[in-house]
Image 1 (tube, rainbow, N blue to C red):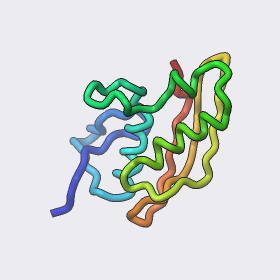
Image 2: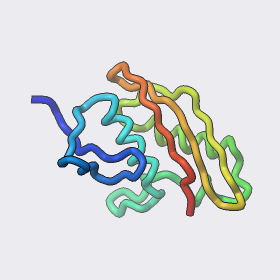
Image 3: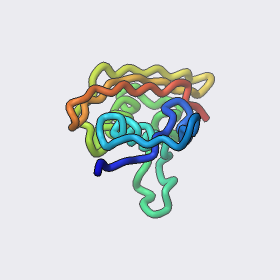
Amino acid sequence: MPQLDFYLDPKTGDLDMSNSLRFTELGGESVAQKVRIRLQFFFAEWRLNPNQGTKWFEIIFKKGSSDYNVNQEIQRRVLETEGVRFIENFTFTRNASLRTFSCSFDIVTDYDTVETIVLEDVGV
């Protein structure tokens, strides 16, 4: 029997229940879902391991933070995700006045698939 995971809508992060509760098999799509979830966690948000999370306030939205540090933080979080082999075509933009962040990239997974990840206008 294949291993299944709940399917989350990539745009909203909510369970997709448009017809009924959907599942995704363990594979490239589930790895992409894990990446999105990991990026959405704020640093120190999870009580059981406060060393986990994306450093949105500490690096990405911090005034004066370099593009290099932002790039490193996002790529570190992605590459630490189980099932991700490497990242291709990574691009990002920050709007300092609106304090928003957008990025897109492809991940190559351990399942020999290429999945595209897009985060649009993440902000505080």
